Length: 100
Image (cartoon, rainbow, N blue to C red):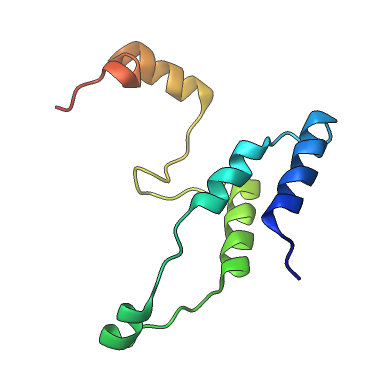
C-alpha cells in the first residue's frame, strides 16, 4: 500500500507538532529527495543480483543499532562517551584536526 507524499508529510507534521514523535518532517523531505539507484549495469555486466531487499536491510540496520553492533574496522569500532572525550582532549575537536 502506498500513500501520496503530501498525505504522509501532513500526518508526520501533525504528529511532530503534537509531540507524538521525535522526528520532524525534514527527515521525511530528505528521504523523498534521495535518488533512486539503478542496478541494471551491475546486473548485466557483472551478473550481480541482490541477496536482500530493502525491508530486510532496514531491519538488519535497526537490529544492529538495537544491539550496538560493532566490528574491527575504524568505522564500526565500539565507541563510548568517555573515549570520545579522551580523543577530544588528546587530539582536539574533530573540526580542527589535521590529517597526519
